Image (cartoon, rainbow, N blue to C red; front, side):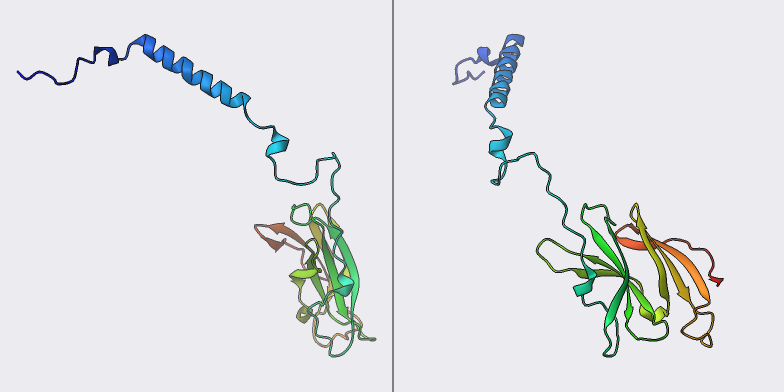
Length: 191
């Protein structure tokens, strides 16, 4: 039989008293680390001290200075209706604007656009809800609880004069899944 070159290490066998001593030492280290943590204010990013005031959200974008995607052939575009509110729940105000070309006669088709604006940035169109190519005009536009409601006027046939739309439809849009979803609308009805 060969004898060990290393002395007997009988004292290295773990006994309950060793486990208890190790657990006590670890608990002391964890408690000391908790007491020596920096204060929350000192650990935050540098910035002005919190005065308890809440900053107001940025104002809703103003559509009058925005280049809307209308093809007016030299005529000006005019915003006929606008409503503002938080459409996507991010705390920022968006504006929904109905606009048309300022044609002077008839009922030119409208477009309905959603505008947003970041801090220090100009307003921009982020969604088109009604294309002017649909040849609809907007009678009413409302916003309540993140739901956009519009009454749209249209034509039953190309023979109907542009001054006198003969169809009316109420539609709704709501922000869902990263886009505006048009909800089921009642059937178009004559006026």
